Image (cartoon, each protein chain N blue to C red):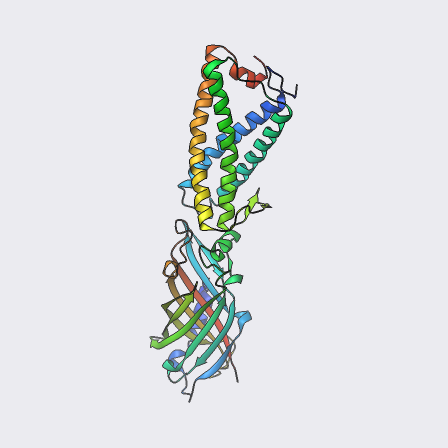
Length: 193
Length: 178
């Protein structure tokens, strides 16, 4: 899933990383699951397969003063993933790729988070099909549209990254479907207090 | 005349023969194309068409076998080794016409992806979702298809030869009698 140019521009205009006010401690945020998406895209011959995966649970602690104190802990619902056409969804959830019957959940747990330009890099561990491997995501955080300057109660976190599915043993349909899976995660979060 | 006699092919047998032959003429090159094609959204429908054609052939072959039990076809013309060979080739072709769609059905079932007849009607899976079943069934599908192509070459070549020789073998399958 890709963001349209106007939305991306709006989000960029609202970017918070360079201008975060100092706060004393990490702040807990709750995911607004209904308005958050985990989108993916991979190659299918000359075309692309796109889809989304519901977020099962998310635990987010954001320290606006010290990024290294931030933690992101997310579980995705593999069994209810959707793709741009039905056969792709079946193939993806089948035993040769994500094996949703045996591994209905995919998890990401952040490790090191560091500032990178206007955004941040999030190094963490992605567990898929029972295989855990390091992955790096690029992160940006924004005030949600309509919120006042300085209001950090509702935020949007945009995470992008790439993984090679073969690293996790998800090798099915390799002659038809690309190995690289591009991720675009739009997490809308609200302060928990 | 619908039924077969001892020296004539009835209309039902001839319709099934040429109907199945026509579908196989489309299905074989389609299957060969699929085996080395880079799939994309634009050509995904060809897989569905292949499965629909294959299951249609399977149904027609089953119908033909049942019909030939009810109304046995005439024996190959002539005699001697050529007639015995013709009979053996006919049996082998029937075997392949059952084995190929059946192995394709098993292999498709084993992938875990739905099989849709005419892109609409779900066809039940007849094998567990399994890489082992899938690989074995596709291997049988591939070998049996190559065998069928060889058998059809013999069958068609022999039919033309006998027609050229003047015994009316091909004419009998076209008109029902010599």
